[in-house]
Length: 126
Image 1: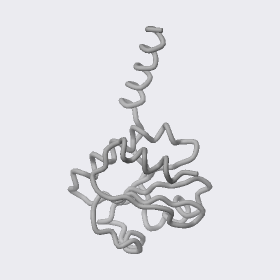
Image 2: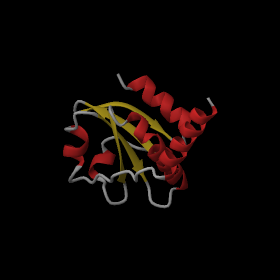
Image 3: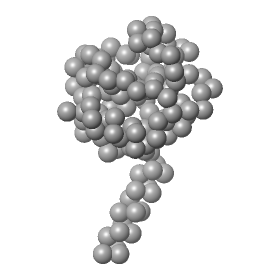
Image 4: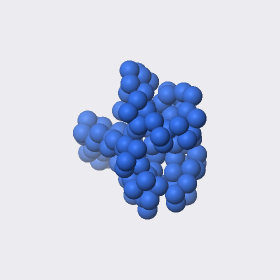
C-alpha cells in the first residue's frame, strides 16, 4: 500500500514539474486550432504583465494532462491578438473561454484556483 502511494505521489510530482507549456494561438491560427478542433478547446485570454494570468496558466498546465483526451488548452495574448478576443467583450483577466463544435460553450474569468477550474471543466465537458 505504501509503495503504491509513493509511486502515485512521484507521478503527480513529475507531472507537475514537467507540465507542458500552453500552446499559443494567434488571430491567424484561431479558426483551425480552436473552432475547427474535434475536441473541446479552453482558451486562456491573457494580458501582458498580468500576474493572475501567469498563476492561472501554471494551474492550467498542471491539470492539462488530466483532460487531454477531451480537451485542448491554449492561450491567446490580447496585446498581439485583438480580432478574436474583442468578440467576447473580455473585461477581466485572465478569461477562460470554452469552445466546442465551432461555438462558445462557457466562460470564466479572474484568478481561479485549480479546484475552481476543475469544477468548471467537469461541469461543462460532456
